[in-house]
Each structure stands twice: as C-alpha cells, then as structure tokens.
Image (cartoon, rainbow, N blue to C red; front, side, top):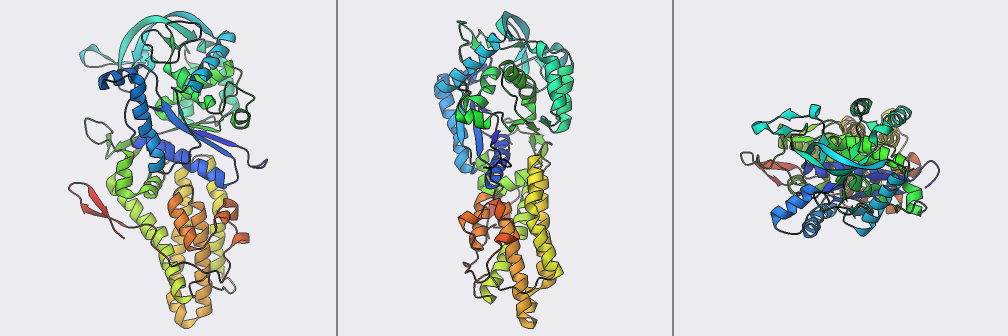
Length: 526
C-alpha cells in the first residue's frame, strides 16, 4: 500500500433475514467482490464487509410464523447467507450480524452520540408504517389498495401506528445535507438517483422516528426501558461496528473510515443517502464517500415472486451455468445501476458466445498450437509487425481502462473493454493464420503465437476479479507464477519469457447445451 494506493473499504447492505437469499443478493455481493478483488490486485489494502440484518418486527413475525424464537430463526437464516461465500467465491474480509454483542455496543454508542448532540428527543408518533419495508411513509406517498388498504410505493401494505417514540431531528439537517451533496457531486451514483435524493431532501424533511415500544426484538435504547432501536439506526451502524467503533482510535477505524462505497439496492437508497450521513455528521463522524444504488432484476419480464414460482436462488445459477459464468453474466448483461431482466436464453447466449467461443476458444486453439508446434514452450519471437504491436498495446492498455471504469462502478463497460481485446485477438489469429505459416514461414508462426500467448496472459490477469477460478486456470496454462499475478504485471516489462515450458492446455469454459427447452433444463458438456 502506497500513497497512490490508499486503503479501500467496501460494503454490501446487510441482508434482511426474513427469507432465503435470492438472485438480487448474489448480484450485489458479486459486484462488491469484483471491486474488492480488483483493488487488492491493484495494490490497495482492502476491507470488504457483508452480513445480515437480524432485528425488527418483520423478523420477529417470520420467527413466530416458523414456530421458533427470533435468535434461533436468525441463526438459521443468517447461515444461508454465509453459505453463499463459498458457493459464489466471495472474498469478504468479515461477516457481521446485528445480533452480535459488539454491534449492540456500537449502535448504543452511536445513539448516545446523537443524544449528546441534542438531535434525539421523545415524542409521540402517528403515521403510516409498512412492516415489510420497516419504513414510515407520508400520506402523499401512498395509494389506495383493495379493501381500503394503504399501499407504499414498494407495494407493501401499510398500517396506522401510534406510539411513544424517540425522534431524530432530521429536519434540522436539511441545509447541511444539501451543502454536503453540493460539495460531493458523486456521493450517490447513478446521478439520476442522486437527483431523487436531493429532491426528497429539498422537500419537507420531517423528523425521523427511531425507536419502537410495540416489540422487544432489537437493540435496547440506552436509559429508556421499553424502547428498542428502529431497525435502520441499528442496521446502518453495522458499517462502523465492523471496523471497531466506538473505538475511533482503533487501527481499523482510522484506516478504513469513511467507507469508499456502500453498495445498495435502489429501494434502500434513502436510508443510506439521507438518514445515514445525517446520523454520522451528528455523531461527529465523516460520511461515506459514495453510495451506489443498483437496479432490480426481473425474471423473463416478471418481478421475482414466490407466488409465481420464478425466484432464482444463487444455487440455481451455479447449477445451471457455473460460478464464474454466473458472475460474468450478471455484471456483463446490463449497465450497472439499471434494472435488468434475467433470461435463460440470454444467459446461454452470453456465456456460450463470450466465454466458450470467445476467451475460451482463443486460449484453447492458441495454446494447442504452441503445444504441438513449439515444443510445448513459450515460442521464440522475431520482430513484431504493426499488427502484432497493435494487439499487444491494446492488451497492455486494459489496466488503465478497467481501473477507470470500475472506479465509476461501470462493470459492463470494463467487461466490454476486455472483450474487445478478446474479439480483436480472435480476429488476429484468423487473419494471421498461424496454421498456414507453419508450412510457409515457421519463424513468423512462432511470433504470432507468442503475441497471442502474451495477450492471453494479459487477459488472464485482468479477468481475475470477475472470474477468479477461470482466470487462475488460464494463467496456469501460460505458466504465470502466483507472485506475477498482480495487476502491475500487466505490462511489457513482465511479458512471457520465450522457452518457458507450458503445460498441456485444457478447456476453461465448457459450452452449455440446452437439452430440454420445454422444461428449462440444461446440461453442460465440453
């Protein structure tokens, strides 16, 4: 780590444990994992946090429905999220649960800071509350539903609630929040969502109810018997708990706060971009550097729903397509930040064309020719032609391009840049036709194959954050040692050494063949 490679702290939202993980949870965490892996490979010290949000009325109701106590319920469901770490090859540094003792201590310390600042007061709350969203809504935000029900913008039913509650003086932070937004124009991405946040704050910003008396499944409010913290002040505090708060002098806290990116779904943007910075500034803490609110996935044009039976579990993705293939498809298919539609046909098309026919075919045919015609070693090359130099320069330029795209969370653009080199390399091999040069000009054949092998090395390096296992297989096949897999090695200074022995090549991306379209089943074969 150097001055130009500062520490990097990235978080997923902590996932609510009222149900099992689905495609959306996998999507968010894969995106964070790619950024964490990229930053590590690029020389940064990284802290990557994920975990589970385990308090609140919704969880208590789900536990009651299951016939078990809330702690047992959350233990079971939290483990489902922890199991995804191995399934989808996440590289998180920590997994936090809001039922941990350290988190309760942290949340209560934050509460005390807000109290000491004069930003918390006791009053009575009356208003519309959606249990599913753990959120209050104004009358103007609601629509009428069947049977006279009030419906939140999310589609959740609301109920009228009246209770004694502690309030946070959010209204007092309106101007300070707007000033903060003005000074930090990239605080929320995409910018269209930032506009929504600013419009909300410019409106009538009301004080926020932050405690409950109708339930006891939560973090107790300090010195206020019968009150537990509203789930959002409890949940948001996880981001500082994990790095040592309330010990602000602790090494992890000093090193990693403020967080570089909180990655969230667009449905919880308001809590992260309005309430959270206000809480932090009230407590005398810095706000995070960026909130990125990504879109939602629909399934074949329909919203994911249990009743429709179209909920895709992460295990389904891995079984159908493989781990790295799933990671690639989710980040390549739609611009990150937009809503996306998951289509089985699109997944097959993307995986087979880009991975099996693209990068996989490029590596397989190049390395097979080297194995057969160059004594299974990196070829000796002659002087590079203009075409050779052009392709190699494109490969060497990938690091700067991908770094810029990922720093703006444009995953699809980063992958587009990488795959343009894959496309160009496949066109180059067809144009140069090394199989013909074998008969007419063997030294030229060796030079062409060297340029291709070196391009494959560069591609193997740059796809590591996206597809770690597949990248490792590619780099193994061009004999790149572990200490030469840092992204700084993506340059001519670290090029392959002629004469270095190469192992027998093996396919990296098997083509996925659909066996039964009528039932949506797939089988995998090379």
